[in-house]
View 1 (spheres, one colour):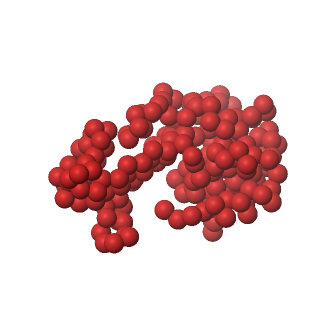
View 2 (cartoon, helix red, strand yellow):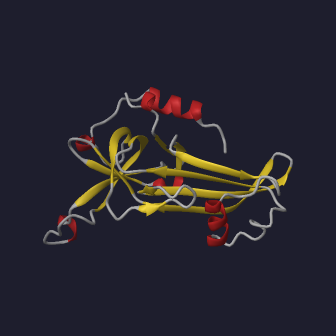
Length: 196
């Protein structure tokens, strides 16, 4: 995983947060809000924690210092809210700086997988995962209800699945969504230092 800390600092440090009720479509903004659960919670595959979103990867060591991704699973919907509004964060292409994660490395017969990782190997059909003949590492990032997130990206609108319909398509209630720009990244962090 690449070190993005200086990228995050440069994006977040030069912007002040915009209130969620003051968002304008197509603007690049920084927002801060508390994660709200929209649906039933998910269960993170490694830690077993209830969450609204998880990103889980399993990588296999292919040579000294080189790892190849063999599993990538991202699930969930992230919606943050403040006193005046809410916004969905499109996590699919987001650069994440989250402290809320779990990881495990399997290096051979003397350091085998935990029970949780054994279950993940079976769930994702990782061959050789339990044979201990390969080196693997698993990394999981979770976002839980109540977490405070900072995000920077482009504001768009989409039909609000919780909103009522108007008389026609143009009258349908909309909600804001934060996406990555065409040639850039959407940044998401839970670091308190980026909130101001």
